[in-house]
Image (cartoon, rainbow, N blue to C red; front, side):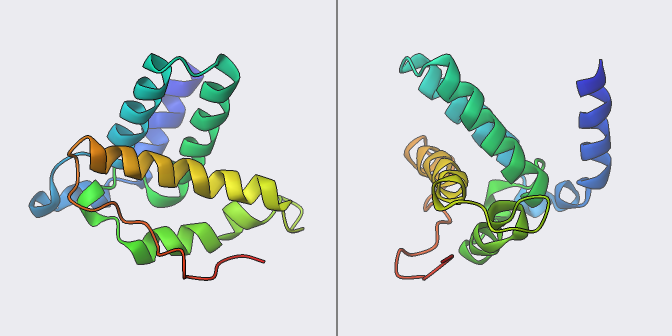
Length: 134
């Protein structure tokens, strides 16, 4: 029951991206659920599924779970990759490199899955040449 209240709050605060009918289509939530389902079918372990689910929840919280995939740009994804939510602990200290790298990797993998699944023509992933983090 608590998760229902949380999702209603998220839907309320993230309703604006849904308002544009020109960008209707799969949302970041759809991508996350589809990707998690796909890796579960590929026999990912429960630890991996739980961990990836947490990382995708972070991405949905920051980027908006109802954000249409068509509205995600490489610039928005790059901004997320560089955000405090990805790069810093709650106390303001920089997270360990493996921690922030995993947050980035999981979203990148989900977006690549969306492209492979035909949900978008090109996944909005920043070019590797874009130097992020340090």
